[in-house]
Structure formats: structure tokens, C-alpha cells
Image (cartoon, rainbow, N blue to C red; front, side, top):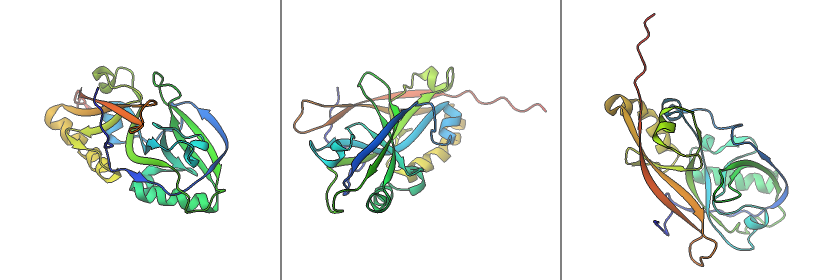
Length: 231
């Protein structure tokens, strides 16, 4: 198993504190991000989010009910994708926490052997704005599911994995994700396939240094060109 102290993308330590009011679990098949070209061509459903790869014991984030390997996909009805960059998303999240409260959209995995489930957590801000949350975040793109019999399904892409690279090009931020999404047709037209580097994260409960680890793998997703319209 590969262990790495450095996250797949640039880590960002957030600076807000909060307390849980209530939460409710929703199915992973509901309220997903709008389909991208990547999703449409490969038969894969994804959502980008702020991934918690490290969490301080007893921190405001932990007391609020967050855990390592959680993915914060949005808040107050606004997905991360709308903010363009992780830093802008976190800044807006903090501002909302200090003024109007939050309805956080988070994907959680109750057990390492189970898939992710969507959760909504309503929180308020009882602490001074300078209090640190005690969680480290990085941008990750979660695979929510695959279309049965579609290219990603045939290739073995799994629900709960994260997309790290597309054709050896790293998904470093929302901008690079958008750029790669626009190139999917080019990749498929040239090679008839797309190579995805996937990562499956899991928590490390017995480690004093690292709180998460991941195992990467490459999957070649072959795409059959659509038949020309005969009309």
C-alpha cells in the first residue's frame, strides 16, 4: 500500500469554527452535480469538494460531526464548482459561518468498507472568527457512481474512488478540471480511450502523524465512438 504525507493536491487549512445543530442522511443517487462532458462520455457521476485529509482531535470540526475522508461539496445550496477555486470556496464558507449560519452538503463514509452517503449538516457559529477549525482540506473529485454497462463500469471504475489524473494530467483545481473536461472529446477522438488515475482514501486511526492514506491505480476507459446520425 502506498502511503504519502503529502495530499494529492495543495492542502489548505481553514480558519472557522462551528457547532452542529442537526443532520439528515440522503441517498448518494440524489442531488448530484450537473453532468459534465467527462460524466456524459464515460458514464460516470462525479462531484468536486473540499476533502478532509487531517483532523485535530477535539477540534471544532470534530465536535461538529466531521471526520477525515469527508468531502464538503457545498453549503447553503451553492456547490464548490461555482467558486472556481478551493480557497474562494473556503473563504465564502467562513464568511457565511460568521453571519448567517450554514447548511453544509457533505459526503460521508460511515465505514471504510462502505460507499459514501450524502449528508446535510446545519451548523451555527458560536466561536470567535479567529478560532481554527482543526481540519486540513484539499480539492478532490469523488466518483458518485457509474452507469451500468457504460465505459467506466466496464473498465471497473468504482463508486467512492477519487479522480487524481486524466491522461497523466493532474486535477489540481477546479480550473484544471474544467480544462480537462473540455479535452475529453479530443482524447476519445484520438485514442478511443481515456486513462484515469484513481485514488481510494481511507482513514488511519492508529497513526500519530498521518490521518489518511490512499492507494492509487490506473484504469483505461475505452469509449466506442457514437454511430453517425443517418437521418
